[in-house]
Length: 327
Image 1 (cartoon, one colour):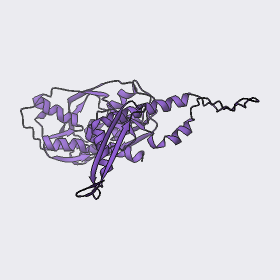
Image 2 (cartoon, helix red, strand yellow):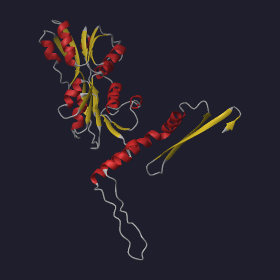
Image 3 (tube, one colour):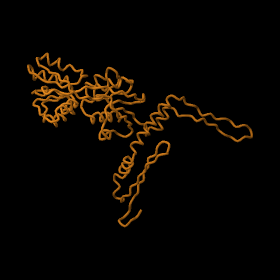
């Protein structure tokens, strides 16, 4: 099209539901020399207008259709010869394509189905590439304990999860908690601790590696360990062997929340051992397990055959691992 300032281009985009009953469209008009990112901007308008939910619904329908195709036998096309003097015709059965044919024909829109056992924020979900459908659920309820005042009168402490930090802040909302010697497990825990409780002296990727460090550097001293009711590490035992007195303080407890998930799942995201135990209460362990941290992976190995582990703590690293695996 022509206008006073020169030529312009119009791009129209549309997203349709599989049955064609629902439609979301968008259009963009820009100058001919300003077309960079035009398709992306048009797609973003569709997504913001409800396209993300429609794509999720389409993904679920495709997954169910793929499962149905696996269970329905393929019928062959039957041709009949016309009788003398009659019009020639071919009778075609309403045959479903085979699974391999369906995959080949719909490869460009075949979705990967995931379950997250911890609700992810939109900023994290947006890190996933296209072709993913994710069920965003909580499989664990965290209940914070009331921590006694004497528990925070300590020079050295161990914090292994963000939940312990939140429990401390919930128990002492009016105190400016700033501790001297803090030892952590995981980058996510460390970030929250340094923001709210004080500088972290040492961070380890697992409780076992933290125990090894403390045994080498704290022999004969005392330390407070803020933990949960379901912890399964041997950190206190290891420290006791090196004459380090450990005072365990209950910071929180975890309770399972069960959800029944479809068998047609490609991967499950686990962020802590408790989520693994909760998931297997009502679901099979056939899918690929993505685990955050070695402790979660150790728990998952009791049930799952295929496991991928992110040594870095944080949802962003887990989703990066997912993207790399399905690339």
